Length: 149
Image (cartoon, rainbow, N blue to C red):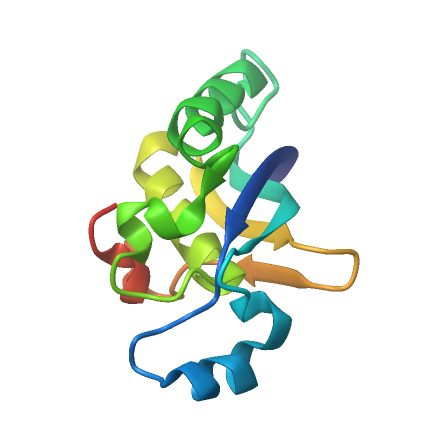
């Protein structure tokens, strides 16, 4: 029997939505105030959901302390109080929350075995939510965020 466990985390980070593929005016038109040359910040809420069989001895899908340790080491230490544009993940892609969500999934997926990472969800604002469940039918996620994790 498969069960699911979700846990929330918070980071504060800044970014600027901008791409060299577009002109300055196209960037302003596409990203609006999020293209501010000085950037802007968010208090992101990250939700990590893992699934798997409930361990008969512990009654848990994953040890919460282990999950906190992995997320702390791999995600919180890396992204909290940073400018996302300075991270190598965003060297060749826009630092949107969609791309951040995919990147966090790809960072955490191999680190949470034997539990299976089911999804990463990020609340950027009270109105903007992003979710990535990995690629259905694939053992590893792939896509634009795979470069230089």
